Amino acid sequence: MVEREQIIEIVVAVTAVFLMIGTMIGIGVNYGGEGGTLSETGGEMLIGAIVGFVVLMTLVGVVLAFVLNDSGGASDGQNTA
Image 1 (cartoon, helix red, strand yellow):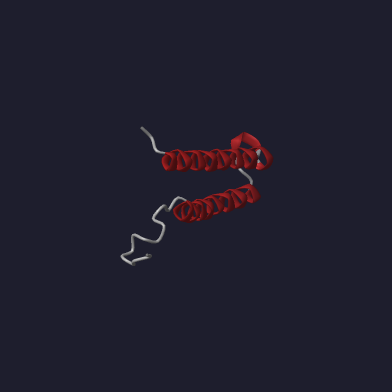
Image 2: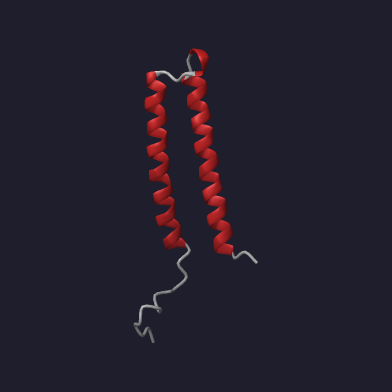
């Protein structure tokens, strides 16, 4: 059975990927040229979208690591009692 944390990670990752695909399609539609080529501005926008996607996925990973961390601080060997 898939745990709750895994479902949250899957949903967030799939949502981010669909957002990236939508952004790439939007750039292609708005900055596409004749014969399926991408204009210079479109290429720059596409590179920015890829860099933004990498940064977004990094931030999502860090946030999920903190949110889904269920250790409660007691697993580091310190006695909390």
